[in-house]
Length: 343
Image (cartoon, rainbow, N blue to C red; front, side, top):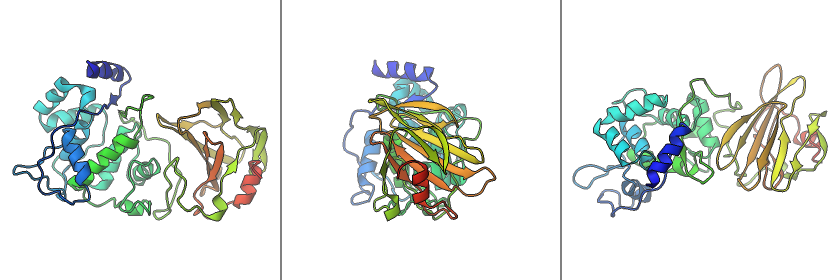
């Protein structure tokens, strides 16, 4: 059977895969008509993620406690476990879900306590194979499109509403978005990773109200100075210093080396439809085209302080997109682009 093959392969990789279940009957809920989350609640019912309350009620605006959210999240990956394994967990009640969460090192706090959006961020980031908490967990979610906060037109850490209690409607919407935009296998199947024991590499520092553009998505109305530039083959410099031979276009792939300059610290990450990895300074990588791959590089002086330049490189189009113009004391964009050999 399909689920057996999937579970065997994923178990060997220490991760959990998801495959959509067949659609069930129309939901019985009489209190969601016209609600903003009506369609996603219907999806959650069909996927057997939630069953609602007696009397045909879903109670979309009811606040959620931790164990309810954890159960919804794990049920959304039912096909990966197979019906027998899921029944085994369900038969143990919430204890079965918490047993799995402990094995995966997920940051669960209090079963019967209301769950805040911050706690959800900490937990969901763990399912993506990262160990972030607090502002960094929110930053990771927003940066990777796993959430958009209270206003999708104003994506900031402050606008995420970290201290707000999650509602049942928000919970199923959150889960649907994670399945759609989270880390996936090469065949497009979402995966649920264990949370690492050690904290993940620090993300670039930003202010609570600094706008965040999800990786791979260009700003809707980018500032004039943030126009993209075509990458030019050959040697180039960063901040006026010669570093390495830049992108080599191999046709179906590109080769990239992370910068290394005395006096500056470089941070880099690569993200595509299947993975999210940290890049090591001075190391050369080859990335395939056609996977929506994006490299993000941050530059900071060795003595510390704010980032002085950040840019993303879109592999499929060979474009450079400068990021985060809100940073203070930056090197002028024109100078940086000249240093990169782009002007």
